[in-house]
Amino acid sequence: MKRNILITGGAGFIGSHVVRLFVNKYHDYQIVNLDKLTYAGNLANLKDVENSGNYTFVRADIADLDDMRRIISQYKIDGIIHLAAESHVDRSIKDPFTFARTNVMGTLALLQAAKEYWESLPEKYDGKLFYHISTDEVYGALELTHPEGVAAPFTTKASSADDMAYGTEFFVETTKYNPHSPYSASKASSDHFVRAYHDTYGMPTLVTNCSNNYGPYQFPEKLIPLFINNIRHNKPLPVYGKGENVRDWLFVEDHARAIDLIFHKGNVAETYNIGGFNEWKNIDLIRVIISTVDRLLGNPAGHSERLITYVTDRLGHDMRYAIDSRKLQSELGWEPSLQFEEGIEKTVRWYLDNQEWLDNVTSGDYQHYYDDMYTAR
Ligand code: NAD
Ligand code: DAU
Image (cartoon, rainbow, N blue to C red; front, side):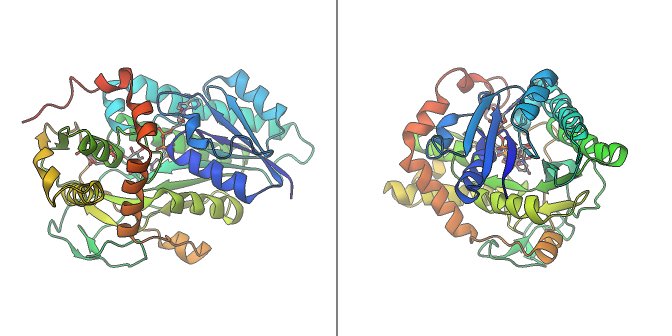
């Protein structure tokens, strides 16, 4: 079936994987990638699909309501996958207003423009979908009740070798929202607006909340690519606090596959949590990154451990995130495709093989953004 799909934030990390998957898989679809190209957006992420006949790039700001109206009607958009956002917690601590503008007002402008266009059509909302991509951070933080780890209650292919969980509680779709950072507060607010457009106007919307993603094309201010890049340059590895915080990691292509499945098979007005039951304490993950990079660079084992530098903690640093994705697994049959060990090896190799990409995105002003925030203790 022919469709015109708008993917916002398609030049970013996750968005570029979603665009690539849709362009390569759905030749009958016209894929319009709408992105403002902030510091985090990079068209080099999409070199391999940029000349495809079913792909168009439009540079625009989601917070510009008139532009959203024009673009949605010009391309006769009948489905939206909304990923555009300011996405880095540390930046939100420095500059919360930019997060409110893009994540809240931008999402609202996009919703409103879609609503007006779809309501103007004779078939109104038939077959339309506004799919909003959100995060597990809206649920707040879980306690670290088992600092040494306990056997994980659920297992999937993505589980770590030791198959550990660091607490007995998990985020489920009905967990009450309790965001702590300006980033998560802005994402929570946008989630509420999306659901409000369904409940008030009957707009077909859907929200998913995913755990931490990792993989190729992630901007190297986030933990995994930052540390790979710093090891490469023999630079300190800034571990916030004691390195005991726990994150639940999912390979980005598995998130993109989940988005594809949910976009086509998910139920309108539903929420699905996405995650691979793959919890890692930061410091343990950092040691895996170090040993993988050292091995692939031919350094002696443990060579880069000396770069570990404990720094002041992130303000309001959430202790533990852990997603329960059993609803998505049982209702739609999704499961992660990769073991974590495989995913991290693939990821490290990609950054080491794409040093030009890393050098290009890390040149310029971005380098000094956090100078006044994290200092060695
Ligand atoms: P990213 O920062 O890598 O990419 C964001 C993209 O949005 C960039 O291309 C940027 O240019 C674009 N953008 C920013 N402001 C814009 C605006 N005003 N108008 C148009 N485009 C704009 O982010 P990401 O990590 O790929 O995350 C994508 C989405 O997934 C976000 O909504 C984020 O909240 C969510 N999410 C991310 C993760 C993760 O681990 N990275 C996990 C769960 C959910
Ligand atoms: O959980 C999903 C979220 O994951 C997404 O919604 C966000 O967009 C995404 O950025 C990510 O947020 P985190 O804050 O968890 O990711 P980050 O890579 O910034 O940090 C991961 C952990 O590592 C976190 O506990 C903070 C810590 N950290 C991070 C950096 C950048 C360090 O110790 N040192 C660092 O230099």
